Amino acid sequence: MTPTVFFLILASVLLHAGWHFLSKQQRGGMAFFLLISFGSFAITLPFTLCSGVDFSLLPAKFWMYVMLGGLCGVICNSALSFGYRIADVSLVYPMARALPVLLTAFITELLYFVFGYGAPLGIGGIVSMVVVFAGCLIMPLKDFRSITPQHYLKNKAMPWIILAALGTTGYTVFDKIGLDLLLRHGGAKNVILGSCAYSTMREIFLFSFLFSAVLLIPHERAGLKKDLPKQWPGYISGFFAAAAYILVLLAMHMVENVSYIQAFRQMSLPVGVFLGVFFLKEKAGVPKITGLRLIVAGLAAAAFWK
Image (cartoon, rainbow, N blue to C red):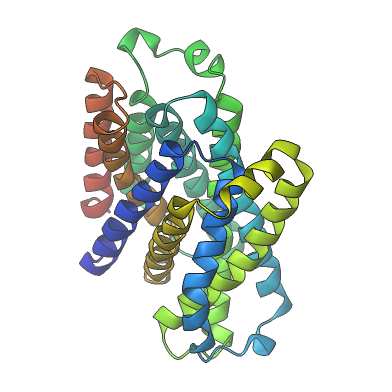
């Protein structure tokens, strides 16, 4: 991984942790995530109009991937919104980030060996992913005696955590493929504007799916009417989310295996824990510190052990 990719991901995770913190602070539901999506769309649209992308040149499969990426984004955001209502952000966030590390690695290896897409991880990459995964799982524990399957399975937020993880894995893989297609066939002036164009198209699908879901759920519909005029944190979060994901898209374009991007996005966990502990007064303990150390060790292994 090049220094450029590393610093792109570092900047993105700071923004990513920031908008998740705002979501938890506002006890954001699906309506709040809808405002985030609208804010993201509004920020990227001007750049898309200047990108030079001719969407008529894009193959049909591009639209399939961008639609699936948007749908997976809705699944992730909706699951997180429900998870944040019943558990601490320092519990939901690390676990929702842990599973995609291994799931993305598995899918990218499958894509390489079956379809020849991308590049293999290698032994060092696989070991580093497992270490990062272990660190993410340990972080939410109150003590080390809780390292049992029952501890995780009895957690009320676990169904939402698993759903968020599946959504995260899905949009990571689909967006990587979709962005590659746009940059290859769309005629973008440069990678940055091409990434903005992809983000805009993705938000159109994400917003459409999320808006439909909000309309179907009475309390979310009521929340949208209440929040729309005054929820400035939602619009600020939209700016953070758009900037963060454009940086991620740029980094995706610079690597052959998107699993490394997924792993290095876990740098947001220390930031998320810091925000949760110092601003939301959530508890920290030895397992959290141990988990963070494992994450750092795993990321170091991913960077230097090939």
